[in-house]
Length: 299
Image (cartoon, rainbow, N blue to C red):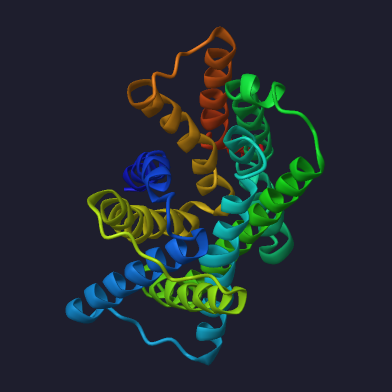
Protein backbone atom coordinates (compact mmCIF):
# COMPACT_ATOMS: atom_id res chain seq x y z
CA UNK A 1 0.00 0.00 0.00
CA UNK A 2 2.79 2.41 0.93
CA UNK A 3 4.61 1.72 -2.34
CA UNK A 4 1.43 2.41 -4.34
CA UNK A 5 0.86 5.73 -2.54
CA UNK A 6 4.52 6.66 -2.99
CA UNK A 7 4.52 5.96 -6.73
CA UNK A 8 1.16 7.71 -7.15
CA UNK A 9 2.47 10.86 -5.43
CA UNK A 10 5.69 10.92 -7.47
CA UNK A 11 3.88 10.36 -10.79
CA UNK A 12 1.20 12.99 -10.11
CA UNK A 13 3.52 15.68 -8.78
CA UNK A 14 6.04 14.87 -11.50
CA UNK A 15 3.48 15.86 -14.16
CA UNK A 16 1.78 18.86 -12.56
CA UNK A 17 4.41 21.19 -14.06
CA UNK A 18 2.67 20.78 -17.43
CA UNK A 19 -0.60 22.05 -15.95
CA UNK A 20 1.25 24.84 -14.12
CA UNK A 21 2.72 26.10 -17.40
CA UNK A 22 -0.74 26.04 -18.97
CA UNK A 23 -2.04 28.18 -16.10
CA UNK A 24 0.27 31.07 -16.99
CA UNK A 25 -1.55 33.83 -18.84
CA UNK A 26 -4.06 36.54 -17.96
CA UNK A 27 -4.93 35.18 -14.50
CA UNK A 28 -2.72 36.31 -11.61
CA UNK A 29 -0.72 33.57 -9.88
CA UNK A 30 -2.33 34.12 -6.47
CA UNK A 31 -5.81 33.99 -8.01
CA UNK A 32 -5.01 30.74 -9.85
CA UNK A 33 -3.75 29.12 -6.64
CA UNK A 34 -6.90 30.32 -4.82
CA UNK A 35 -9.12 28.77 -7.51
CA UNK A 36 -7.13 25.53 -7.31
CA UNK A 37 -7.51 25.00 -3.58
CA UNK A 38 -11.06 26.33 -3.37
CA UNK A 39 -12.08 23.74 -5.97
CA UNK A 40 -10.02 21.00 -4.27
CA UNK A 41 -11.60 21.79 -0.88
CA UNK A 42 -15.10 21.73 -2.40
CA UNK A 43 -14.44 18.33 -4.03
CA UNK A 44 -13.04 16.88 -0.79
CA UNK A 45 -15.92 18.16 1.37
CA UNK A 46 -18.46 16.83 -1.14
CA UNK A 47 -16.84 13.38 -1.22
CA UNK A 48 -16.54 13.20 2.57
CA UNK A 49 -20.10 14.36 3.22
CA UNK A 50 -21.60 12.00 0.63
CA UNK A 51 -19.64 9.05 2.02
CA UNK A 52 -20.21 10.02 5.66
CA UNK A 53 -16.44 10.07 6.31
CA UNK A 54 -16.04 13.71 7.37
CA UNK A 55 -14.58 13.61 10.87
CA UNK A 56 -15.46 16.06 13.62
CA UNK A 57 -12.64 18.50 14.30
CA UNK A 58 -12.48 20.30 17.65
CA UNK A 59 -11.22 23.86 18.18
CA UNK A 60 -7.60 22.77 18.61
CA UNK A 61 -7.78 20.65 15.47
CA UNK A 62 -9.31 23.53 13.51
CA UNK A 63 -6.52 25.85 14.63
CA UNK A 64 -3.92 23.35 13.46
CA UNK A 65 -5.81 22.97 10.15
CA UNK A 66 -5.72 26.75 9.77
CA UNK A 67 -1.95 26.94 10.30
CA UNK A 68 -1.41 23.90 8.08
CA UNK A 69 -3.52 25.50 5.36
CA UNK A 70 -1.54 28.74 5.50
CA UNK A 71 1.80 26.88 5.41
CA UNK A 72 1.04 24.08 2.95
CA UNK A 73 -1.67 25.48 0.67
CA UNK A 74 -0.87 29.19 0.61
CA UNK A 75 2.56 30.60 1.53
CA UNK A 76 4.40 27.54 0.23
CA UNK A 77 2.97 27.98 -3.28
CA UNK A 78 3.28 31.77 -3.34
CA UNK A 79 6.97 31.48 -2.43
CA UNK A 80 7.78 28.97 -5.16
CA UNK A 81 5.72 30.66 -7.87
CA UNK A 82 7.35 34.01 -7.10
CA UNK A 83 10.86 32.53 -6.83
CA UNK A 84 10.45 30.86 -10.24
CA UNK A 85 10.29 34.33 -11.81
CA UNK A 86 13.87 35.08 -10.67
CA UNK A 87 15.76 31.78 -10.51
CA UNK A 88 15.82 28.68 -12.76
CA UNK A 89 13.22 26.00 -12.06
CA UNK A 90 16.09 23.54 -11.57
CA UNK A 91 17.42 25.55 -8.64
CA UNK A 92 13.91 25.68 -7.17
CA UNK A 93 13.70 21.87 -7.46
CA UNK A 94 17.08 21.42 -5.75
CA UNK A 95 16.13 23.69 -2.85
CA UNK A 96 12.72 22.04 -2.47
CA UNK A 97 14.36 18.61 -2.33
CA UNK A 98 16.00 19.64 0.96
CA UNK A 99 12.57 18.95 2.49
CA UNK A 100 13.82 15.42 3.22
CA UNK A 101 16.55 16.83 5.49
CA UNK A 102 14.30 19.51 7.03
CA UNK A 103 11.62 16.93 7.81
CA UNK A 104 14.17 14.67 9.50
CA UNK A 105 15.43 17.58 11.61
CA UNK A 106 11.94 18.85 12.49
CA UNK A 107 10.74 15.34 13.39
CA UNK A 108 13.68 15.17 15.78
CA UNK A 109 12.94 18.58 17.31
CA UNK A 110 9.16 18.30 17.62
CA UNK A 111 8.53 14.55 17.96
CA UNK A 112 11.87 13.40 19.44
CA UNK A 113 12.29 10.94 16.58
CA UNK A 114 15.78 9.60 16.04
CA UNK A 115 17.40 10.86 12.86
CA UNK A 116 18.35 7.79 10.86
CA UNK A 117 21.80 8.05 9.30
CA UNK A 118 20.60 6.34 6.10
CA UNK A 119 17.85 8.96 5.64
CA UNK A 120 20.32 11.84 5.95
CA UNK A 121 22.82 10.12 3.65
CA UNK A 122 20.12 9.28 1.11
CA UNK A 123 18.72 12.81 1.21
CA UNK A 124 22.17 14.33 0.69
CA UNK A 125 22.88 11.91 -2.16
CA UNK A 126 19.57 12.76 -3.81
CA UNK A 127 20.26 16.48 -3.41
CA UNK A 128 23.64 16.06 -5.10
CA UNK A 129 22.03 14.05 -7.87
CA UNK A 130 19.46 16.75 -8.54
CA UNK A 131 22.21 19.37 -8.68
CA UNK A 132 23.91 17.33 -11.43
CA UNK A 133 20.60 16.84 -13.26
CA UNK A 134 20.08 20.59 -13.45
CA UNK A 135 23.77 21.55 -13.66
CA UNK A 136 23.64 23.26 -17.10
CA UNK A 137 20.72 25.38 -15.91
CA UNK A 138 22.44 26.24 -12.62
CA UNK A 139 25.89 26.92 -14.06
CA UNK A 140 24.54 29.31 -16.69
CA UNK A 141 22.66 31.50 -14.21
CA UNK A 142 24.32 34.66 -12.93
CA UNK A 143 24.09 35.66 -9.28
CA UNK A 144 22.15 38.85 -8.57
CA UNK A 145 19.96 40.42 -5.93
CA UNK A 146 16.94 38.75 -7.52
CA UNK A 147 18.72 35.39 -7.41
CA UNK A 148 19.38 35.70 -3.68
CA UNK A 149 15.77 36.76 -3.12
CA UNK A 150 14.54 33.79 -5.15
CA UNK A 151 16.74 31.39 -3.16
CA UNK A 152 15.46 32.89 0.10
CA UNK A 153 11.83 32.53 -0.97
CA UNK A 154 12.40 28.93 -2.12
CA UNK A 155 14.02 28.05 1.19
CA UNK A 156 11.20 29.71 3.14
CA UNK A 157 8.64 27.87 0.99
CA UNK A 158 10.40 24.58 1.75
CA UNK A 159 10.33 25.33 5.48
CA UNK A 160 6.59 26.06 5.23
CA UNK A 161 6.11 22.77 3.37
CA UNK A 162 8.02 20.95 6.12
CA UNK A 163 5.96 22.69 8.82
CA UNK A 164 2.79 21.54 7.07
CA UNK A 165 4.14 17.98 7.11
CA UNK A 166 4.75 18.17 10.87
CA UNK A 167 1.25 19.52 11.50
CA UNK A 168 -0.32 16.76 9.40
CA UNK A 169 1.68 14.17 11.35
CA UNK A 170 0.45 15.75 14.60
CA UNK A 171 -3.16 15.59 13.41
CA UNK A 172 -2.82 11.95 12.39
CA UNK A 173 -1.40 11.08 15.80
CA UNK A 174 -4.60 12.61 17.22
CA UNK A 175 -6.74 10.33 15.02
CA UNK A 176 -7.64 12.81 12.26
CA UNK A 177 -7.18 11.49 8.73
CA UNK A 178 -5.57 13.50 5.91
CA UNK A 179 -8.81 13.59 3.90
CA UNK A 180 -10.56 15.64 6.60
CA UNK A 181 -7.60 17.82 7.57
CA UNK A 182 -6.75 18.48 3.91
CA UNK A 183 -10.32 19.58 3.20
CA UNK A 184 -10.19 22.12 6.02
CA UNK A 185 -6.59 23.09 5.29
CA UNK A 186 -7.29 23.76 1.61
CA UNK A 187 -10.40 25.71 2.58
CA UNK A 188 -8.40 27.93 4.94
CA UNK A 189 -5.57 28.23 2.41
CA UNK A 190 -7.99 29.37 -0.30
CA UNK A 191 -9.54 31.97 2.04
CA UNK A 192 -6.09 33.32 2.91
CA UNK A 193 -5.18 33.55 -0.78
CA UNK A 194 -8.42 35.43 -1.52
CA UNK A 195 -7.62 37.89 1.29
CA UNK A 196 -4.11 38.38 -0.09
CA UNK A 197 -5.57 39.10 -3.53
CA UNK A 198 -8.05 41.61 -2.10
CA UNK A 199 -5.42 43.40 0.00
CA UNK A 200 -2.94 43.56 -2.89
CA UNK A 201 -5.55 44.69 -5.40
CA UNK A 202 -5.13 41.55 -7.53
CA UNK A 203 -7.97 41.12 -10.01
CA UNK A 204 -9.95 37.86 -9.99
CA UNK A 205 -9.75 37.24 -13.72
CA UNK A 206 -10.61 33.90 -15.31
CA UNK A 207 -9.90 32.33 -18.69
CA UNK A 208 -12.90 30.48 -20.04
CA UNK A 209 -11.00 28.20 -22.38
CA UNK A 210 -10.08 24.50 -22.50
CA UNK A 211 -6.40 25.14 -21.73
CA UNK A 212 -6.96 27.03 -18.47
CA UNK A 213 -9.98 25.07 -17.19
CA UNK A 214 -8.40 21.71 -18.03
CA UNK A 215 -5.15 22.57 -16.27
CA UNK A 216 -7.07 23.91 -13.26
CA UNK A 217 -9.05 20.67 -12.97
CA UNK A 218 -5.86 18.61 -13.18
CA UNK A 219 -4.12 20.68 -10.49
CA UNK A 220 -7.17 20.69 -8.21
CA UNK A 221 -8.18 17.01 -8.38
CA UNK A 222 -5.20 14.76 -9.21
CA UNK A 223 -2.60 17.37 -8.15
CA UNK A 224 -4.24 18.40 -4.87
CA UNK A 225 -7.06 16.08 -3.78
CA UNK A 226 -5.24 12.86 -4.73
CA UNK A 227 -1.61 14.00 -4.58
CA UNK A 228 -1.66 15.71 -1.19
CA UNK A 229 -3.87 13.04 0.38
CA UNK A 230 -1.54 10.26 -0.80
CA UNK A 231 1.56 12.17 0.29
CA UNK A 232 0.33 13.17 3.74
CA UNK A 233 -0.95 9.63 4.32
CA UNK A 234 2.64 8.53 3.69
CA UNK A 235 3.84 11.13 6.19
CA UNK A 236 1.71 9.46 8.84
CA UNK A 237 2.66 5.90 7.86
CA UNK A 238 6.35 6.20 6.95
CA UNK A 239 7.43 9.31 8.78
CA UNK A 240 7.96 12.83 7.36
CA UNK A 241 11.61 12.31 6.42
CA UNK A 242 11.06 9.23 4.21
CA UNK A 243 7.86 10.54 2.63
CA UNK A 244 9.61 13.78 1.68
CA UNK A 245 11.98 11.94 -0.67
CA UNK A 246 9.12 12.36 -3.15
CA UNK A 247 10.40 15.93 -3.57
CA UNK A 248 13.64 14.50 -4.98
CA UNK A 249 11.99 12.01 -7.31
CA UNK A 250 9.26 14.05 -8.96
CA UNK A 251 11.72 16.38 -10.79
CA UNK A 252 13.17 13.17 -12.30
CA UNK A 253 9.70 12.23 -13.56
CA UNK A 254 9.26 15.77 -14.87
CA UNK A 255 12.50 15.51 -16.88
CA UNK A 256 11.44 12.19 -18.40
CA UNK A 257 8.09 13.67 -19.41
CA UNK A 258 10.01 16.64 -20.85
CA UNK A 259 11.85 14.24 -23.20
CA UNK A 260 8.56 13.74 -25.07
CA UNK A 261 6.89 17.09 -24.37
CA UNK A 262 9.81 19.47 -24.92
CA UNK A 263 12.59 17.43 -26.53
CA UNK A 264 14.81 17.27 -23.42
CA UNK A 265 18.03 15.33 -24.10
CA UNK A 266 19.85 13.35 -21.43
CA UNK A 267 23.54 14.11 -20.94
CA UNK A 268 26.25 12.10 -19.19
CA UNK A 269 26.18 14.48 -16.21
CA UNK A 270 22.40 14.20 -15.97
CA UNK A 271 22.56 10.40 -16.09
CA UNK A 272 25.12 10.36 -13.26
CA UNK A 273 22.75 12.61 -11.32
CA UNK A 274 19.89 10.20 -12.00
CA UNK A 275 21.96 7.30 -10.64
CA UNK A 276 22.73 9.28 -7.47
CA UNK A 277 19.04 10.10 -6.99
CA UNK A 278 18.06 6.45 -7.31
CA UNK A 279 20.86 5.36 -4.93
CA UNK A 280 19.61 7.96 -2.48
CA UNK A 281 16.13 6.47 -2.75
CA UNK A 282 17.53 3.02 -1.91
CA UNK A 283 19.34 4.43 1.13
CA UNK A 284 16.31 6.33 2.43
CA UNK A 285 14.09 3.25 2.37
CA UNK A 286 16.71 0.80 3.56
CA UNK A 287 15.63 -0.73 6.84
CA UNK A 288 18.36 -0.68 9.48
CA UNK A 289 19.56 -4.08 10.60
CA UNK A 290 18.39 -5.07 14.04
CA UNK A 291 21.15 -6.49 16.15
CA UNK A 292 20.31 -9.93 17.52
CA UNK A 293 21.65 -10.51 20.98
CA UNK A 294 23.00 -13.96 21.82
CA UNK A 295 21.50 -15.39 25.01
CA UNK A 296 23.91 -16.10 27.82
CA UNK A 297 24.10 -19.83 28.47
CA UNK A 298 24.98 -20.81 32.01
CA UNK A 299 26.80 -24.10 32.16
